[in-house]
Image 1 (cartoon, rainbow, N blue to C red):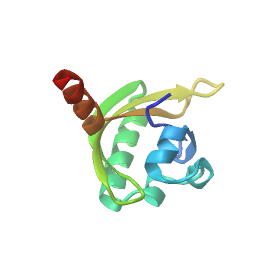
Image 2 (image 1 turned 135 degrees about the horizontal axis):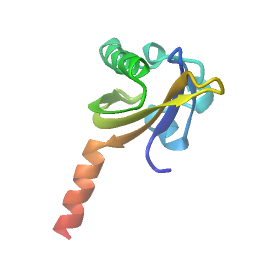
Image 3 (image 1 turned 120 degrees about the horizontal axis):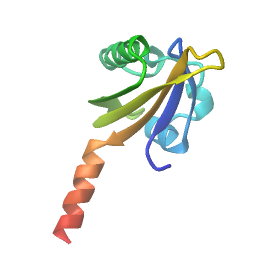
Length: 116
């Protein structure tokens, strides 16, 4: 999958991610797994992500919102988060899946395609 994807447990700890997320963050999945947003992101962004995750855990289902993400090299980009809860064997919410969409990349790609 070309979009950055990650998934977290009910405590907000990363369980895994795909290569696109690793590339964007500039970290290997092993460096991400077990961490929280507060371990990987600047505090202002981490608080926004944590708040959104809490909302989703309180109201299971899906969630879409736009925010910023900061890569390891300090570049901030606008992204659209597409999140959904998943359940464990007992039916309780066990975590969150996320696939992000880079707004700058999609806007730029659409502009380039239209220009051609």
